[in-house]
Structure formats: structure tokens, C-alpha cells
Picture 1 (cartoon, rainbow, N blue to C red):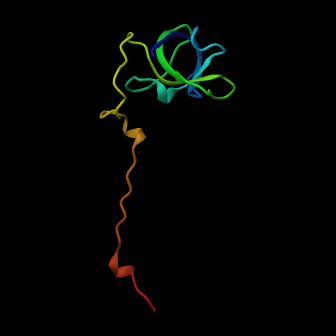
Picture 2 (picture 1 turned 135 degrees about the horizontal axis):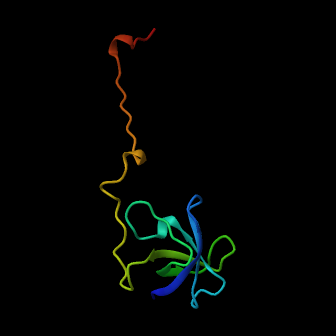
Picture 3 (picture 1 turned 30 degrees about the horizontal axis):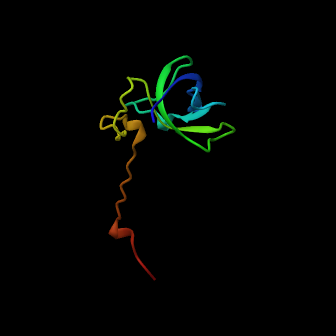
Length: 105
């Protein structure tokens, strides 16, 4: 079931916040990874959102959001990794062995 709610608070530095809705009395904990949006994902206090939630909750809240979106009541498809994500989130390692330095006794 899709729930319509409002963002009570969201700490972008910590990556989590709380959503309020009649269907989630006491608040619904939300982590940035549950936000269905490309790129940087954050919410703003007072923002209207649509979400899915489960119980038990997390960190003292009775509910935990499993998916959050703000573009309308139609649930977007599950998020796939961004193909154009910043290179800051990627790393590579190349190991080259120099046979001249390998020896045994």
C-alpha cells in the first residue's frame, strides 16, 4: 500500500530522517538508500512524499520506510545504479608483478 506523508525532518549529513503519516503513528524512520531518485538523495522538512513502510521500525521509531518517492502516487521502478554516477564513488586497483624481482631461496 502506498502511504502519503510529510517529511518531519531529514539530516542529509547523517543520511536519515523521519516521515509522518496517519498510517505510521509515532513516525517512520527513513534512510537515504530508500529514496527512489537518481544521484544525490535527500529529503526536505515539510516535503510531501509517497512511501512504503514496514514494522518493526528502527532507532526507536515503530516503522521503517522501504521506498520513498516524491513524483506522484505511481510507484517508480526499483532504483538501478546510476550509469553516470560520479567517479568519486568508484575505484580501481591494478597489480603488476615484476618477474625480475621474484626469486626464491
